[in-house]
Length: 75
Image (cartoon, rainbow, N blue to C red):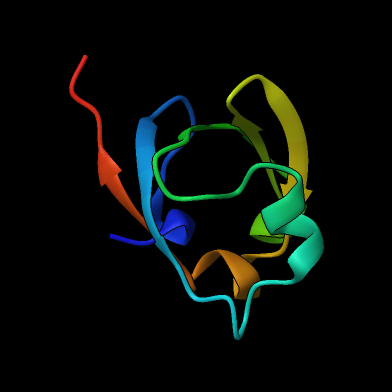
């Protein structure tokens, strides 16, 4: 499953990041394998996505989110 498929309020754990397509800045901000991620909100027209990654809030474009693989966390 990719980060782009996450629905509002769902939790996941990042399993793989394609560093070819994901900017280095996102990796530096904590978008790394093993970190938890929650979709907080989606902007109009579904882009960008507002995320909580290990307590840090950031917004990323959907075209970038499709290159980040996650595993769902069951609550």
